[in-house]
Amino acid sequence: MRVLGIETSCDETGLALYDTSRGLLAHAVHSQVAMHEDYGGVVPELASRDHILRLAPLLQKVLADAAVSQESIDAIAYTAGPGLAGALLTGASFASGLALALGIPALPIHHLEGHLLSPLLSKDLARFPFIALLVSGGHTQIMAVTQVGAYALLGESLDDAAGEAFDKTAQLLGLGYPGGPALAKLAETGMPGRFKLPRPMLNSGDFMFSFSGLKTAVLTAAREHTLSAQDKADLAAEFQEAATEVLAAKSLAACRQRRLSTLVVAGGVGANRRLRERLDSAAAKQGVRVCYPELELCTDNGAMIAFAAAQRLLAGKAEAPNKEGAFAVRPRWPLATA
Ligand code: KG4
Ligand code: ZN
Image 1 (cartoon, rainbow, N blue to C red):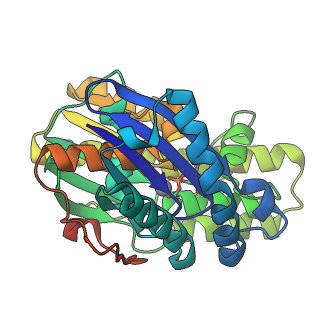
Image 2: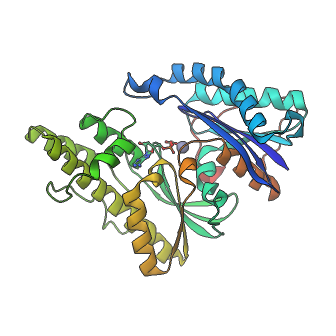
Image 3: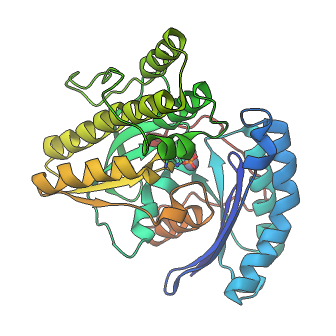
């Protein structure tokens, strides 16, 4: 079975072809980061317009890269939510139109399910059941996953998502948008501990998070001092220590509580090196195996959408396709109800 995956929920246009017997055949992503940079964040209308321009050429690219024909595709999966309504609609309508023309089903997929299952696409295969740490620009969640389609939410952020906190802190330090990777890079040259930042909710005894206070603490420190380049690096390093300490501690506590020995890490912040170091060392002490998606599949992409749809089809859990080509997007959509 061969599935085309289409991702357009935010500022990346991602298309991919996944084959259940041959694996990932091709994937291509166009990032709009350069376009939104001047505005300091994603401009939804610009995002939608750009997705429309990119979809058809990217489809041609993945078909050519995989050396397969359009007619060999068995199903088309698209991100139906959560995300920006207009951006979601571009992928949903493209997928539904193409599926109608080819006489194959169009399948709506939850963006976070894509992230969540993406480590299963890597060589280092994860197996059910597992605890998942989902850390993206929009979400910070710990979930217990027993099988495809069975996602129990154990805890999440009460305010900012981890990626959002990285991005906002980076902006405070003048690092531009999206600041997560830039902040992580700057942190490598800084000394954690010189500035003292809180570890929010570290000892709350549950799996909830809060990151907005951390960002405010950075703002306060930035207001109290005129920051030199080294000060900024030290603040970045301390911020990264604080955020990753809480994320790692709670993920491993969830593994202990549920007596699970596999931890899957997904979403953009999963690319953070310090987070990986902390998770790996704490997990080793606890006999837990940590599985990450391939680095290039950490951020938004079409491969995870194609893969999630294929897993649902194999498990007999795909949403029934609409024969008339009608579709809907769900900008707000809790994963537990997917
Ligand atoms: O999963 P993703 O691509 O998009 C969403 O669905 O949100 O995640 C993007 C987020 C951004 O906030 C970005 O700054 C963050 O992931 N990110 C990082 C790193 N790489 C990406 N944060 C910290 N360290 C990184 N290396
Ligand atoms: Zn994402």
